[in-house]
Image (cartoon, rainbow, N blue to C red; front, side, top):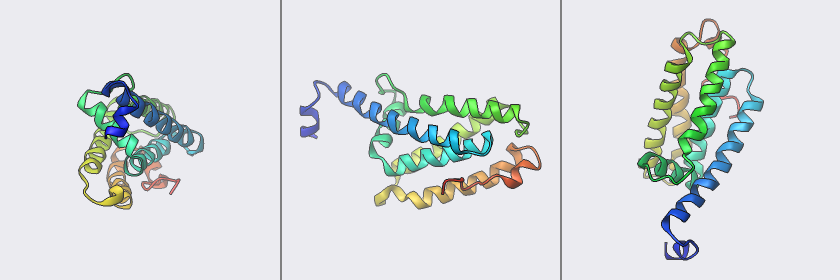
Length: 165
């Protein structure tokens, strides 16, 4: 820790750098998802998997998520980066006629799902933050959620495990 703090004039500067690096990784992952997904609702699913993957594989993202949750995130709130994208995608899914519920409650549900994933990863004691297990749990959650979230018959051709796996 001493070597890290030596290069930064204050803890706030270190936190800002962590959040900045996490923002770059997160925005790149979300951009990939938005350009590759077959539908807006599949993009929401894929985005959740991409975010879970970042939380399990990138310590800087995990640290930024914790800073945001604790309210000590300097100027870049990690959750704000992806919640705005999810809301936009859910609005598009609504416009496409894919959602069985309005976008606002759907966004709340996805935010709660991601908060649970984040807490699970934060508390995991296993090296590698149990990346495969987290992905499987997220896929199982989506399999349960989709029949109520997606308008029939759309949920039958969505991929709960994501399309980039």
